[in-house]
Length: 92
Ligand SMILES: [Zn+2]
Image 1 (cartoon, rainbow, N blue to C red):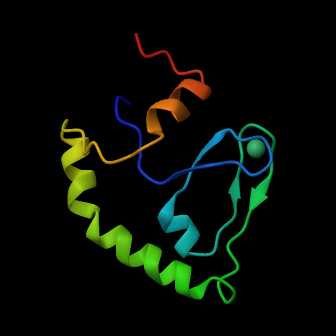
Image 2: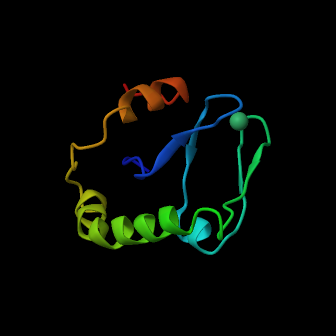
């Protein structure tokens, strides 16, 4: 993999970047942090508006993600580089 997936969030417990699998979140599945094992579960009722917004964002950025997979960097993800560094991914 040469491109970082969009939608990474820092783990609230250990600050390690967590990939946010939008499809899993929208489906109400738990996300498990690989660093500390924390389980994040979206409360669908409590965060219904956020999930709706996330779903809209997900569809609106689908084209940009496909372009990124094709090799072009969208260049609109502040913090991604720092997150990659914290994850210990070699960049050279
Ligand atoms: Zn964690």
